[in-house]
Length: 240
Ligand code: PXP
Image (cartoon, rainbow, N blue to C red):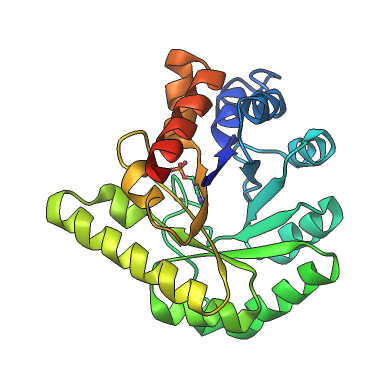
């Protein structure tokens, strides 16, 4: 069955809104693990708008599954990640004004930078995933940079309607096949929810989904354990 990694950033968003200790993203991560998540994702942004450095260190200590640290490939955050030693880093582009990660990385035009950063992580046995649009040029560049995974950006698919959604889905499928042929492993995420996950989950080559906003939002209504279990049920249905 496909795996689900739960992004707990928005638990920290709620905490930061009051500047207090609650709700606690680390507690949420442990509940998500108990409900069946295969891993936990958190994004240590340069502006620290939600997840804080101390959360990442505590997650590293407490998690029983795996920690996927989403991050920009800047010197400051790379040095923190090398100290934390997550199981996987997912490198993403980051802009100060954006509400969420807006696009994929342009690996092709910064190949030597991503190659250098990937080598630093590999020296510490940390796996590297590059968050890219489902575009052949970027997949080939990710392979050249030495990445272990690509995370395919599903945002265009999630925002598309009708026939456009079908063609975005076909693009993801083709990209997943191209990446697999090059020996890359494939994750996917961004904008996935209880309505649009199943068709993407039927793409054979994708191993794991990184889902945050819709799941944490749903948890406000039904509780985090049930929100994780309902998302896993969709992945189970996609296998049938
Ligand atoms: N994957 C990446 C690389 C992301 O930047 C995000 C957003 O933090 C997600 C997955 C999760 O997206 P969403 O919150 O829309 O589920």
